[in-house]
Image 1 (cartoon, rainbow, N blue to C red):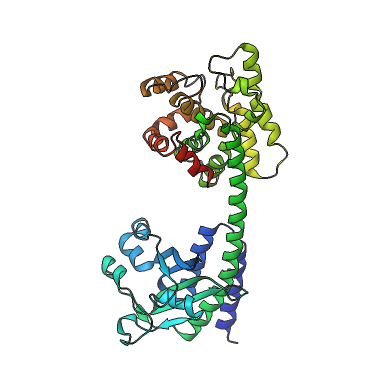
Image 2 (cartoon, one colour):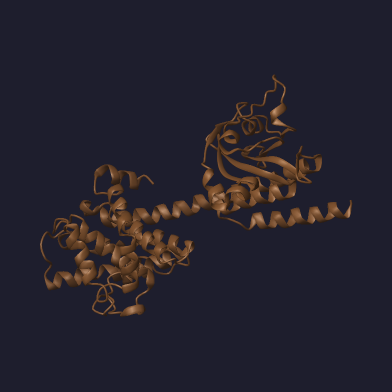
Length: 398
């Protein structure tokens, strides 16, 4: 084994370790494709996953277009698309045969070639595809997880066919990638199942009051918009979005006579209603999962007020967790804007006036400012998740 081969083998092992430790699917797919291109000197490539017997293009990279258009514009060109498994495409043929499809130059294939090349992308974006390598990603059972397609090997600035060594490396990477992708898909499936359970528990609390059936979905999206505008970071934003449906889970412990009372609550009834924050905190306690911990934080504190007059703990200012500050405004905005058993929706002008007047007393000034910067976007959320039977059924089916 030469020194170069030994070095390449060590790099492959390091890539395998990196792949096995990456569980977020989109990041994993980007890494698989970029590392495969690096090892094979490919200018471009696409990574497909097998979904229900078709190949779905999940990730695409193109160095030539990135240099010409910039990263943002070149990335925007890509749109996810689906191709059937079969000989209608090169990637489809690799999946169909479960074998490598290697073409030196797709522009000069024999007329009777079984592998079909579609020039539509090249024509649309002034690109020229020549050498092509499609490698099936097979799991331990020999089933097709996806296809790694690499385009235009570059040597000394010229497009050349993919070498035998590049093909060998691509096969090794595809084998590692198949295992990593299946693990990531399993992790994603478990995560989605947990989040689905959380959302359904939130729905259970709202189901008793059908007028607010989509309240939790609207509040989640309003909170997401505010958190993004505050630049909290994608992981923090995702946590808030996934945790906010649980803000009123404690309502499962509130009697129907109080929860659905059409008029104002008596003082004694209000005391009972306010217990839903502490009930929610008890339901969500003692979990090591970050989303459950943030859910509990929101459930217990989303009725605290900036000036300390809220409940249950009379917290003031930044004593109130930021996640709860955000959901507090989103929750009140939706309550004011929606029909409830005790009120009709307020006119838009009145809603805006109340929110502005209560900034600095009920709401954090920083959170409120972020909300008004994304106010127009909240209208689309309201349209998408209005309180209709169809919309609610769509949410429940997630």
